[in-house]
Length: 458
Image: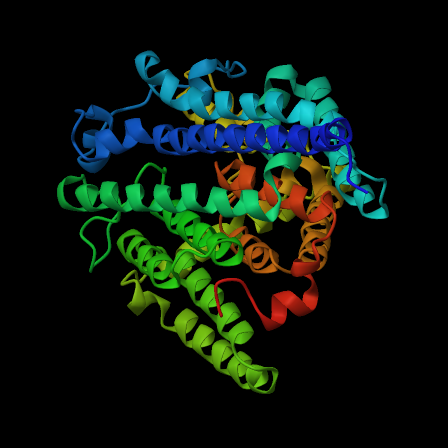
């Protein structure tokens, strides 16, 4: 029996409403991902313009050709921090740094209505991110109580980027991640164009015997640009159908121009993972052994590959702060729960470096090089918080096998770089955790699917 026009209209209303919601969500994603691209490029634009000599920079000139200055005796007062400690750029360029904070705030505002209408079900796995969040809260209140709210806010800022990503349930499904990858690959293309200009005309702040000028694009250091390129490449291989040749060519070019040893090792690991997944099960053990051999040769010959004889000294520079930490024999409570949020952060160290009223005890307390994610976590939220963070990454990788290669790269990159303070990797990490921990499992993302037919490797 045919349905009446009224019944057909009633049944069509939910479908029409769902279609409108999907269109609105897609438009929001395009807007937010476009703002993310602008924020990434703008964040280091002022430094790139200086390094490329588009803008005259006496500070960089003095760095390359230093003039000896006899320092005055320091004043024994606690350092004072201001907005310039956050951004380190002239006031007229402040907007280029503020854009990433504007993006994060906008993303949170957009995410709240979606969270209210989400069908998030209680799960035992939610205890892991909840416990990590509790450790952050404890460190925040500890820092506020001992050192003041400004120090706590400094430490909370990068955590906010991670938390904002974890709120993005509307932008973390497979289709949304595929769209995001297209925007991020566009960033890599733009970074490569900027890097080529920087390589040709930029000041040689970073260099090797082979590369007269290691590029850093709109990031602060060459290694950060290299790591970002590998993370984006791995993410795109997991979630998009962008040409593998294009992805590998972009990544190889940026890794070469940055001269980053970390990025080179990560590239070998990334290619090894996909090589293992691409071959039949019978061949995987052979490919694993070959990959380990290639990785070992890469590490042992690293000084010659990147033509940096001191490359292992740089590695020791990541390990030395950990030995210093233990040599100071901190109290057990501090080892377990940290010194407090913000201590040893890059923003705090930069503010201290600019302060003209620095007391040595204050420097000893606040200044600690945290060039690795584990050390930064132990320093601020203790071993307990550090273990909870990596437990969260491990559980996420186990639940979401499609994203597991990205988590492997993030884990390894964090050994030499503080990823929690690296925008936009901290935000992308939060978005991945949202997908892996909060969204229901997709049958196409099961263990068998991810192993037998990895995305973009058919």
